[in-house]
Length: 387
Image (cartoon, rainbow, N blue to C red; front, top):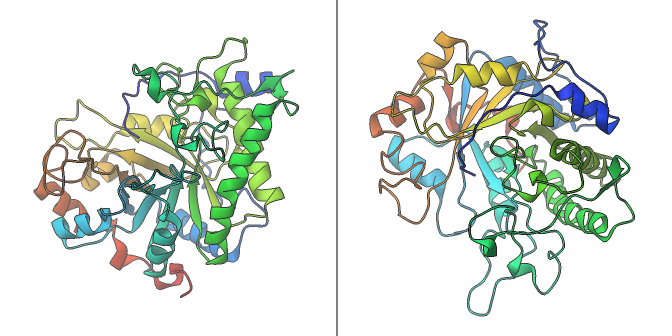
């Protein structure tokens, strides 16, 4: 989700040591070619195939992606891309944001069919990524679920939640009610991810995104300011690693390619639980120059101890494919964020695809018809989910 992102460099090693977790060298990037080996040794054959293919194209081509509109089921963002370019994105982004919501009388909850839409897109041959705007774990599964929020510091207090990652003695506080609520939320999403696994769909899984927020102060509860002296990044890393353990080893989900998107070196949870590194860029100063964002690319590339593919996990302006390759910033994929309520074709600040507030019609068509950009029609048939 779009926010103003300010970059603050802190070495990962310090925080991981404080948490008693494996360390990585965040200040240098290895020049060794990355090995296409997933963090999960029991990953499905389909997941391994996708990851090997991603490694093969990284540095040569870029995958075109588009975020779906979770809160309005009537809007088809892939169709809007096709209407403007004659092409479909190769990658669609979905969100578990409203999973666990029930809606109100006469106003059914939106976004409860994201898994069905993702399966349908994968059966067309497309790639699927999911994020999760994780609503207040204390309220999910209760009659008050409709009031569950995920923000921590919005000016409108009614949009915030007080939920905090429970930590005691340098570990997650497993005796706390909050810990049980975290597990309940993870288990809820595990059921959705299991549906995708059963359908043969590999998920580029991007949980706990944008954790560090601005200046290291997260705008979501999983990165919020704490009053107990525990570094926010340490609490986040503990939660990431616990989620990985629970989804992979408890729930047996092996269709996941783990995409880390914490936006700060100090929040990196370790090479053993990350497969791809991503960054969200909303560069209000781009002014339709469509920069490659090479500085952020290089910063992100240097974070893992072992080389991992680098993705532009969310964006407003699409970097020019020619500039990406010329500058040495070959993002594995880009994902344009969704539109808002202004409607198709309308230029508005919150319409990230439609209109030309960010990307002109000429630029969109240059990108989607560029020989180095992979659209749905260019994806290899062996990636298509079983029918």
